[in-house]
Amino acid sequence: MTQEKIENAESFSEQISIALGNYYNHFVELLPRLGLGLIIIILGFLIAGYIGRFTSRRVKARTADPLMSRFLGQAIRLLLIIAFIVLSLQAAGFGNVSAGIFATAGASAVILGFAFKDIGQNFIAGVILSFNRPFNVNDTVEIGDNFGKVKALEFRYTKLKTFDGKDVYIPNSDVITRPVTNYTEDGFFRWDFMVGLDYEDDINLAKAVILKTLEDDPRVITDEEHQSYVAEDELATSTVNVKVMFWVDTTDYGRVATQTKGRVIGNVKKALMQEGFYLPADIQEIKLYGRESELNLSMKEIKSSDD
Image (cartoon, rainbow, N blue to C red; front, top):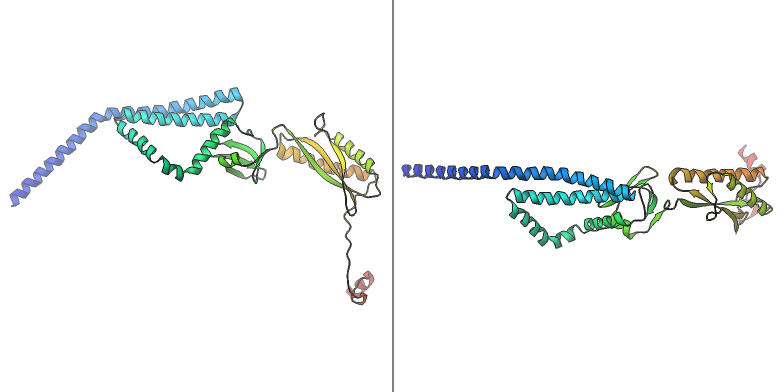
C-alpha cells in the first residue's frame, strides 16, 4: 500500500512537472508576441499624445479657440489609445480577449447606459459645446447661480473661476440645458444706478451735470450704438429719483467694469454737491398713539432724566 502511494505521488509530480514545462514552453513561444504587444502599446501612447497635441495646435491656429482645440486633441488621443490597445492585444495573440471585451461591452451597454447616464450626457454635451457654445476662454458668464470667468472645457464639465477665487465645476449637461448669460461676448455692458434729488432742485440742471460727468470719464463708452442718458424714474416720498445709465467695456469685467461704476457714482455725487444740489435721505414719519402724559417727547426732559 505504501509503495502504491509512492508511485502515485511520483506520477503526480511528473504530471505537474510536465504541465509546468508545457506552460513554460508556451510562455517562451508567446514571449516575442507579448513583447511586440507591449511595444505597440508604448508606441501607441507616444503617437496618440503627439497626434493629440498636433491636432490641438493646428485647430487653435486655425480657429483661435483654445477650448475646442484642447477638447478635440483629448478626444483624438483617447480614441487612438483605444485603437492601439486593441491592436496590441491582437499582436500578442489575445484577439479573442479584445473581441470578448467588445462583445461584453455591447451586451452590457444598456446596463452601463443606466448606470452612467449622467456621465454619458455630460460627455455628449461636451462634444456639442466644443463646436457650438455661447462663450470662450476668459469670458465672464453666468450659468444658473454661478458667476465667473470660463477657464476650461473638459469632457464632463466646464470650469469657472469666480471673482472671489472659487473654482466651480459645472456639468456640461447643465451648461446646455440652463440659460447662459455672457457679459463679455460683444465687450459692452450697461450699468445703472439711482440718484435722489430734492423736489425743489432743478432736475434738468442736475441731469446736465450728470451727463457732463459721464462724458469726462475716459472709461465710459459713448458712440452711436451706446449712449449714456439720465431719465426721471420715480417720484418717491422725499426725493425725485433719476436713473443714470452708461456703458462700459467688459473685457475685464471683474476689475475695470466694476471700478468704472464705483468711480462714476463717486464723481456724480461730487459734481452734484459742488453745484449746490442737496441729496436728501428718505424722511421717516413716526406716529405714536396714546395719552400724551404717557409719552416722553421732550428732549429736555429726557436729558434731565438722564442726569
